[in-house]
Image 1 (cartoon, rainbow, N blue to C red):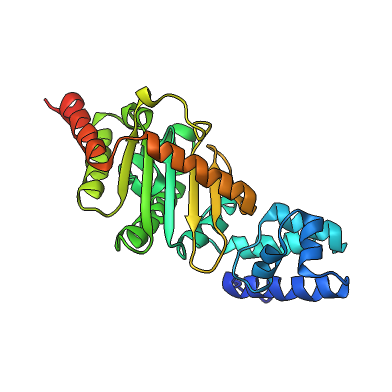
Image 2 (cartoon, rainbow, N blue to C red; image 1 turned 135 degrees about the horizontal axis):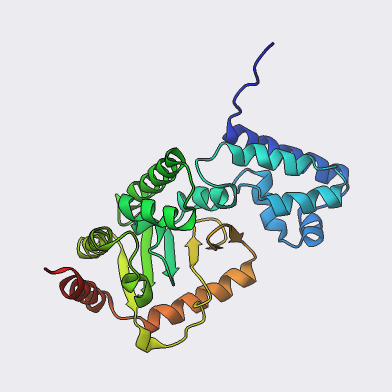
Length: 277
């Protein structure tokens, strides 16, 4: 019996876009008209049709409902996302970060993925999922390290900015040796100017983004996007008004944080206080 072929996710994304355009036009809807019915902009529908943005499951379900396509776009979306190295909820965001001009991360409880060492990632995954298979852990570690190498290799493409709450740096993950290596890595990235890193101290009090981690991505010719996540899922946010509000909140957190040089000094002091024999 013939075996099913592995599908090219890039081609599947183009197929998704072509089918969306065909079925939208058959329904007599403009891009803006469909956008209004599925609660997004017409421009976003256009990006989907041009394969400039990856589809998301929740949006695909809404499109199926409006176009009466009986789950077609949800199934097709699953085929697109299946080809990613990352969890389905993060796949679209991971693709976007490769095209971003700037990525601004705010971390409340955990070191941002792009700054994590391999040992930190392993310890963190084990703390979340004690029974996870070792092979799966290594796949996650490998994918995360690959992302970091790709984005940190050139500090200008994209511009990386991290605001890290003091709680992140004081919460030990994986033991003293793992945490010491992690703090040294953060200090090294800051010291070599691969990214701008600011620490938000406890003394800064409450900020608008304290509810959870948040990332804002900006692009040359595409609208900005934001991404947030919990321990088990995540959400890509592309509504322009919501993204603009998140970006303003990020600016407020950035203004409340210590300057980069003072932040580097803070990390160095933590290393000296907590990890010097």
